[in-house]
Figure 1 (cartoon, rainbow, N blue to C red):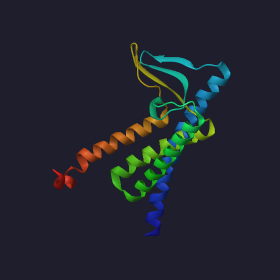
Figure 2: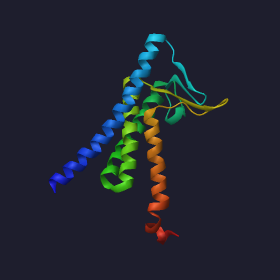
Figure 3: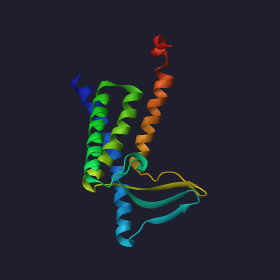
Figure 4: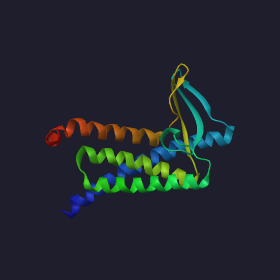
Length: 166
């Protein structure tokens, strides 16, 4: 039994670390380009550019704050939410657990940036013609995929478990 629990913890931790290090590697790469060229504005395809911005807000640059007190409060709230997600990982299994692990890995990486840089470097600029989506990073991709998977789980996987509420 201990061996099985250890294997699960090791697998879950490995997934979180892979997400964290993928995000860190991509950010370090972009920041090195920015240091060499003073700006990152790289055209990749007609729909995708790399353009570095510093996000002091929450996901996708929403609610940006220049005031240190508000920034610290938002960072504290994000830290608390990340801790709650960790507790939810322990209490769930299967598909939902891996969705939460995806969210946790991305959240930890962005929280690291908030603490280390006092902002999160975002650099993936997806656009169609002149319509630009929010600029985001690799951690945001994992957070978004995790949230989509949780929504899917609630709608389709847990559908049979929630019949008493219908």
